[in-house]
Length: 549
Picture 1 (cartoon, rainbow, N blue to C red):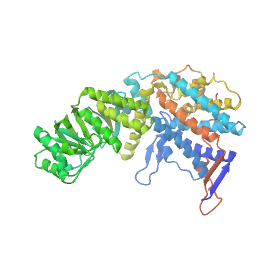
Picture 2: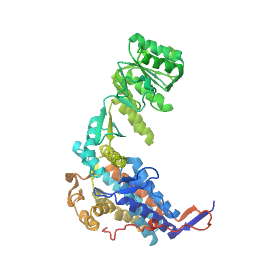
Picture 3: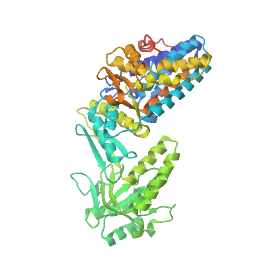
Picture 4: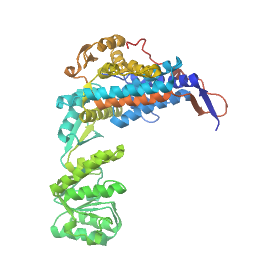
């Protein structure tokens, strides 16, 4: 297919229009008094949200050149969300400001590659300064405040998340689920939990709650698919000799083997429950080995050299109780050797330190949490599906912010830490266009503070000027309209989120500044034609009229 091209200033202008269109839609949500956006859905009711990345995902522009700019800034939000789960609006606002200031410098004759180098140096200096200012979380109050601020100053969400973190600890796993009941609740699971339930409803022991409960069971762990009766009989015989119920964790149980187990339940001759083992592929055997250590059993697998026909009591794990629902399994009171469990946890923690892929890290964190028995579930309810989804997004943002704060500490919030970070740029020595790049970052750092104040109904420029002259850590509280020590005011941000937002924004801005050619698909049926920008595509940006730096 033929392509349409734009060059030099024209290419950058069209890209910038897309940057502005997306950023202007997102930045109205910034701050404790930020507004919402309504997103149309082709099926179902619209979504109302103030979550930056959710809004950004929905934006597509008619002008293909502008749309490329919008999609690049969308990557800023997505990258920030992927790294820390929050700070997407801040990242978008910073990206817009850096693109604006950087392109202005390039159009005035600055060398874009030298400008880019200056941006990179400035961002490195600022992130180092932020890390140096970070203060470790002081207690429950800080946790609750961080969470509530990330959830648009919702104190209920803040308290619920603080409660969850207190129960599961720094490395504990906290998950969110939609609930049919109103409000927010926290359920802390004192045991091992994973998201696989029973394979047959005939194994339910409590029809009212639709759950199967086994007291003092023995547990068969295998990565094999069991279909034949002779494959399951050794485990059944061991369970019957011990007069205990049987939990089967396997890749699958089907055919005559499943029929035998179901028949035992129906005729009350032996209670059993079949659950698909957690994990997939090579991860399944690893997760089964975790459970085997916790339960004091062995994994029946080709890799371990144990066959189903050889299973005896010594191969089976044990625990106090297992509760299985349609979707999840909870093991309480596992009987494994605690010293072996501790050694397994240390081994997984060492792997976690070396892991570089987010998916691997998430998997290892979950496995550690299972073995240490620290799992909390936050259940979110709402009057309508629209309210539920909006609240769920805020809870997820708040949870991500809290995790980041626990990991890397907190800095003064409300845009203050970034607005005052220009002081870290003063020692930098640079000449010519590299100095221009440093100035691009300097002029952009106060942008989040400006929009937080503006969205709250205050004069953004005036607020930025005042905060620039205040002592480090003193800033503007958009909720009260006053100035003071941000830590005393409870206006704090996770350092990791603030740093990630700045780094993600700078990476995209540097790429756009150095762009000389833009290429899009030619419009079908009308070669050479590119649709005129729609009204929303022509946004020049809600640009600040002045800059103090």
